[in-house]
Image (cartoon, rainbow, N blue to C red; front, side, top):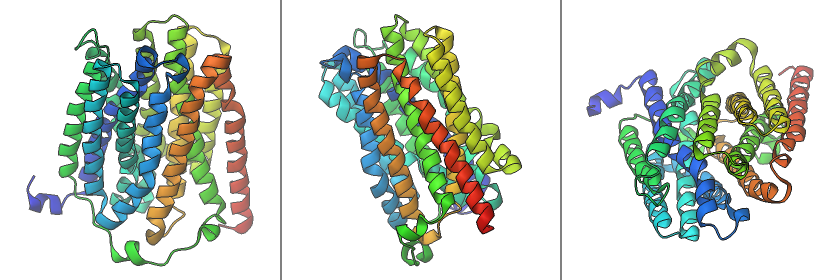
Length: 399
């Protein structure tokens, strides 16, 4: 693509490239979520630490989220997107080496580097909003996340097909493949035309957090995305390890994770349209109800069907809650407040994901699988109550 072509790149092309980048990034991250706990079982000094690599992944994302947002405010989104992918390449290489040498600490560092990739790539959805017209922002967010549909199929297949490439060092090949995927992501990002920060965004007036949080919509928006991600991460992280403990084969957990990721991203083809048709509050609340349904399925039994149905419902609930929360969030800040509000929102998501992933291993070790889906009930119910409160406050104030 020539410089002139890039300069006149249409919003649709930009969103398409963001969706492709999302697919490649998601393939890398699916490798971590579908294999890191199993690698932990193989090389960790204790089974209770099996999910620690996923925790360090989330910590890496959490530590990067705020700096990434402010770097984007200073230099633009494109160079930071590329930097995140380059760190992922190094992390995937270190993960491959770690498996060869049974180096658990090094493997945890490697997954933390993959977390940097997540932190930067999570801003794809905001880049899509900035490339679209305001009336269609929920659709733009949804279409970027459809890249995850490709990843749900390709990511799990690639991770599985390459798992024994360096046998007997199981999963070393999966992380070697992730190097190539991240390289492809860099190539796609170079084709994007993303606007550089404007003076209003860099130096415009900003409200204090006290003023910002007086908006019930902002509170509900941030809580929706945080709760949806935390509950999804808790149950998804625990599921492959729980299935291994219950005697299921690796291929069984692979299929469950694949269907889960399809549940996360297939609804993106229509979530934006549903939000536009029925309103963001209803769809976000429905997402929380689906998370409760996932918890019910998880408690109902430990057969393959129970795991599969629970994880599919978990994915759909996450999709509605996360896209709904993101859509609400974009109504609540000025251009000059964009960096700090987006940063705190995504930091909150990462922080709660860290708590969730760290808790999952401990909960499995001490109380078994049944303890995990139980957590979904109080948090999802509290979120539904918060959405109802926000709607009632908005009607009273006339906003």
